[in-house]
Length: 436
Image (cartoon, rainbow, N blue to C red; front, side, top):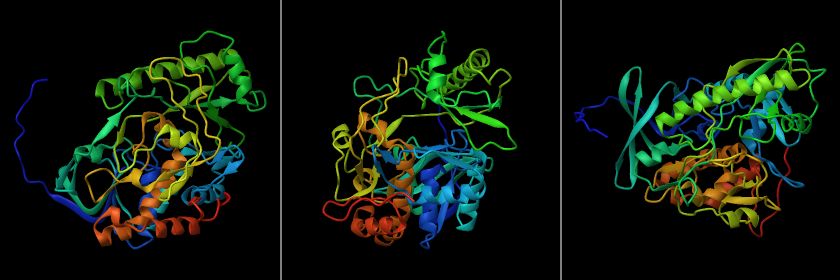
């Protein structure tokens, strides 16, 4: 690629905080809220114009991953979101999935940010990081106001792709070991005009119809969820598009995900209108602004969680949350068939997976924590990401005071999480706490 010279320049220092969070998905907001409630001055930058990440700007609405067989485990921030949404008739709970109305969830998150005095800079993209030795000093951003720097004592990478960590020079891995390919991406969309009385009552019924007839969408099952109906009108959120062999960090592939995802969305709509009772007059009412990226980078930390850890249901002395999702790898290059290996009991995610190698004032929140490709296919589930965000928020005051994330008293952090209602197993100490 041809190179040009870009002259050095002085950047305005737009703001300084005790903690700066890059990315306002659920993990980032959880970290922000829990830190702010403990007196930390928190700033956030967010590329999109809404908080919430894939469940909101990605239109997914679903939060899941708190069940493993007969075992249930809890995440304090998820429970708070559910309570607030219930008061607005904005969530359904079938015991396995929480299905939020995406727009109401976005409203709830905006309220939480405002209530807790968190300064959020929307429509602001992280483009670089300035580091001195083993510390990040500034995030470099771009917005309509131009280039600027934002300073902090503690940084949180909640970008979903590890953008801040990589710009700061942290080591990472991407995709599966043999060829670097990542799981297929999706583009979620909404269908309105569904006749609730005639539509199939269960997903297996719709999947049986889907498998009877030819189509060009590389998935063998239907995934549709229904937010609470309003005024008798039923709308379905569809997460079935699969765009193969793409790198979501490549701008050309991002455009292909948009084009191919949109094409598949309309093919799915046509199939439903022709084949599924109650969908004869349905139409697409929205296609997500944010791409449904399942996998990109994984930032290497002080511990790399493995598939053996997941499948053995392993406990760790420094674990922060429980997770029990299966190793759900969406095939990078072929039909998605679901399934995958599943743990027989939940496992813990260690604090050490959140602390990237070589840096003392940076946490990784959400998807790109330190795991192998296989283990990542379990930890990427959004409830686990939210739980890790709340743990970072609780750890923030001590990490800032001591100037080093590795000096945080993890036992104290675990006790705080348990007091809030988040499930933590500590070998030899107590058991799991039930979900509310």
